[in-house]
Amino acid sequence: MDRKTEKELLEKAKLPEKLAPKWHKYYKGKIEVIPKCVIRSLEDFSIWYTPGVAKPCLEIKDNPDKAYDYTNKWNSVAIVTDGSRTLGLGDIGPLAALPVMEGKALLFKYLGGVDAFPLVINEKDPKRFVEIVKAVSPSFGGINLEDLANPKCFYILDELRNSLEIPVWHDDQQGTATATLAALLGALKLVGKRIDEINISLIGVGAANVATIRLLIAAGANPKKMYVVDSKGILHPERKDLEEKKNVNPYKWELCLKTNGERRKGGMAEAIKGTDVLIAASKPGPNVIKKEWIKTMNDDAIVFLEANPIPEMWPWDAKEAGARVVGTGRSDFPNQVNNSLVFPAVFRGVLDVRARTITDGMAIAAAQALADYAEKKGLHEDYVIPNMTEKDVFPEVATAVALKAIEQGVARLKLAEWEIYEKAAWMITSTQRKIKRLMELGFIKSPPEEEE
Image (cartoon, rainbow, N blue to C red; front, side, top):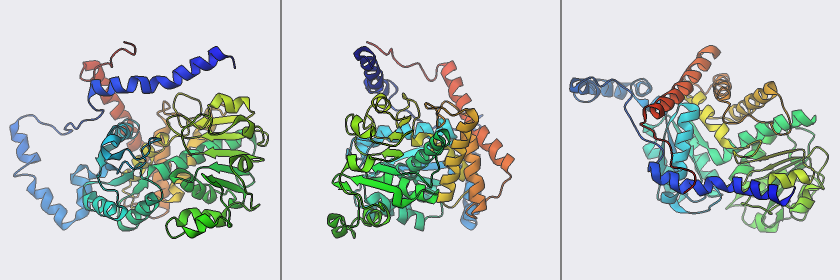
């Protein structure tokens, strides 16, 4: 690649962060709440509020499930964080994390038709955090945990899943894992390899990769052929530093015992050598992963570089080093391996059948639906997973998730496949039409010019 082309690519990659402050200030936030019921005169408020509202309140008191019929609980999700691990920015606190949570809410609504509300909590203690979320949970049909530090994120997810009767999802864990599995299934189909035969190197042992490992194993990957690297090297049973901390972080110690059947030792270079797949979810780059390491991978190598906002290495460098399929977490490069493709559809599906939880089987169903969609469209090196502009993929994923919830007995409603698909498609497309119409009418104005 010549220097001019590389410079152009770098400038393109940096454009979003250049425009973001100006656009955020212009709109003063990305979401708002507007009524969805008729308001023809002040008399209607006697139905929507007092005295008429007392009747549905009493019916819900006698039958709590009626809250799904009489309120927006059926379509409401709380996006909850303490800001302790926001994107690749680290512990920036709950207030600084608010723009991310608003962006998440925007994606929930536009891609899934889901009403999602940012809920940033100024509480770092995981036990108290859990209690706060449990206390506010009656308002919502689901909980989306976001940007929580490792290892408390695992505890928080497990505690809330075990104690609440609504779906709880940690997007940095389950969402990223599902997107990664979907991209991997598509890439393996393209290169003609099987998930149960491949060697996988995984860089980073945070929320994303811990969940990815679990989901890959559930989908058929062999843990003994996985080589996991943290900041001090490859995980293996002789890592005394991790054994000493197994009560604090049992998840990482479990990986020491479960993975790395060869008992490889060393760092990233040793882990990557001779593998078919590299999944990096570590720290922002570039130059975290070296081109010379990619050159040691097997033929038809698959490389996913998922750090944000800058991947562990630039995708063109991975290609030049011999990788056949390269994906990142960014929407401005091919093969975006990003949970934005997953969580809106997953929640659309679970909300429509009023699921009590989200199982690994439901996540695998979502990943398979994404992979099947990409295969139908035509797999190639720069397209192993659908992108967010392919709006018709979201109802398909929602349907697959809802059907799996019914099959596994965690859905309150048992609907036919066509009912699920039609409802999901309507919720998603009607939202997008409303936004388009608001733009046409001038209620949502065009952003300021891209250049001063």
